[in-house]
Length: 102
Image (spheres, rainbow, N blue to C red):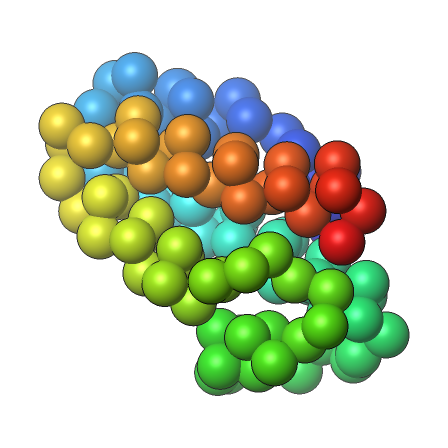
């Protein structure tokens, strides 16, 4: 999951092309990898894609304000003009979890 979460190519390409459908596919994959990584860091079994955001918010090893940050990222990903901001928001969240060894 960490390797997939760190692959920036598709997100960047979707943002540069302002391709909403492709970007959403790439963001979905990146968030899925992020969630799997979060579950692994917290020694929890990944239950699949149901209610992940609710569950990870209670983890001890997770970036602060995770729920709001992911919601903001998704909101930014809904407009061609703000895809780059959504991309940057994901990278910041991911980097915080990796670099700070949360």
